Amino acid sequence: MEKRIILITGGQRSGKSGYAQRRALSLSPNPVYLATSRIWDEEFRQRVLRHQADRGPEWTNIEEEKYLSRHSLEGRVIVIDCVTLWSTNFFFDNNSQVNVSLEEIKKEFDAFTQQNACFLFVTNELGMGGVSVDETQRKFTDLQGWVNQYIASQADEVILMVSGIPVAIKNNIS
Image 1 (cartoon, rainbow, N blue to C red):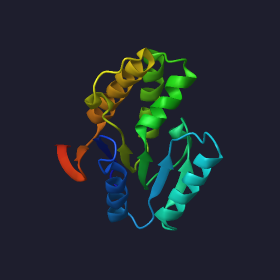
Image 2: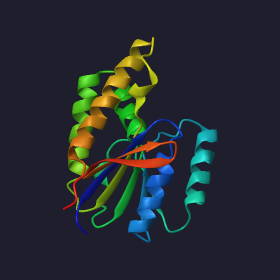
Image 3: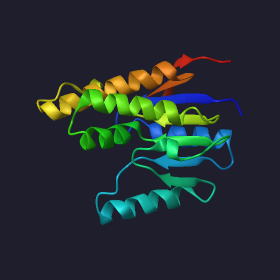
Image 4: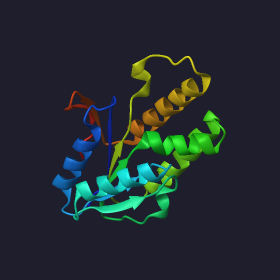
């Protein structure tokens, strides 16, 4: 397998995760779903279990809040869902320090994507929704925008989801 990085971005409920999962299944009979969300409470834990069951037995499900590179997934097709929640974990652990969080995320992204695998990163375009009146939200939106730009710069392919329709905005075919 040739290493490939695919970034799938868009607004809320634009179809990003569904597209990423369908794409992963078209590339592998047994893809990996790497979930980055923290489990906040029992209701959320039940939601996670329902989502895992909905994906089916062909998926390998991994929960990892921050350190994606801990997982050796050489030769696999991996959906990372999602970059926004992943960035949130660094942001809050670093007391909303944007620069510290950005450097840690870039370092972890670089370490993780050294593996020879197909990576499908799902993220949100937060900056398309207007400017928040809350300083912490503005800082996080800035962080998320810079993280998205960094991943897009490293990606072979970038897909923008609009109303469930994938729009290719970058495609480096080797």
